[in-house]
Image (cartoon, rainbow, N blue to C red):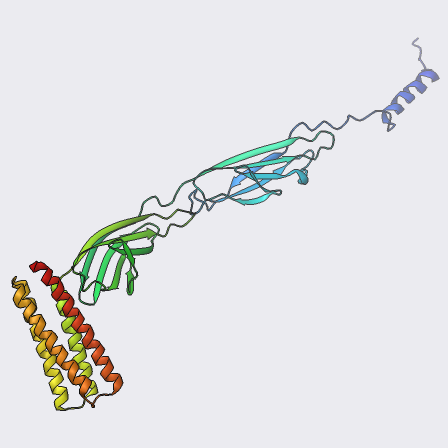
Length: 341
């Protein structure tokens, strides 16, 4: 006959106590928080939009994170090319000077017991967006008794900032300038009408590439123009014509006006004859007709000084103009006389 084993009271109590120990809180110790052994993760991003040229170098955006200990904001250092530029995350400008530029970001995590330093860098190489100076062509130079006209074509990737005009190495400011696309026109007052000879012209064009100091490039184109006796004679004859128009405007129809008009017209004819003889190489005859023109101008001056039909202002103006015309003719005569020596 099988017997029934009855557990003892002692074993039941021990089992209950053992089971109770497993469910009583605080009887077992939790594992300590693992130590943070990784520094902050730093991100340096090149933002879209920049192209790595001095015109548009671009921007960096920097930030960092540490999932275990966080970031110690007081330790942020952002340096560009070895110079401290900031103490916070965000956007920083890439310098526009040519060459390599390095951004360095350093920051510690928030581990109070053993903070760790994170460091990261990024390099951007900047190149010049315009390496070629202006391309100059189609230079034309024309002159008359009043003006020197200059035109040229100037082409540059960055456009043209300015053009300088040098005559015999002296910078001359134009009376007027026009720009039509790549074509430029300049008008200069003819200061050289009585300084006969060949004049050297240099046009210096500077491009509009001004992204940084000394960034602009320039180039030059050269030409010449000549002042001849023909130009000087035309100028004097034109001055006499202008004076005839003025006399006609201030004198009513009279014998005086006709007389002055006739004398000045004869002077113009003599100047034309003087130039023709000069062109033929007959300088003696040329000087003779120059002298006849001067005598006629002196007669006009004598008449104007003695008449009472002109106001004092008009009379003084005519006399001053006559004096200038006579000086022009004397200047030409002196230069031609040197050719005879």
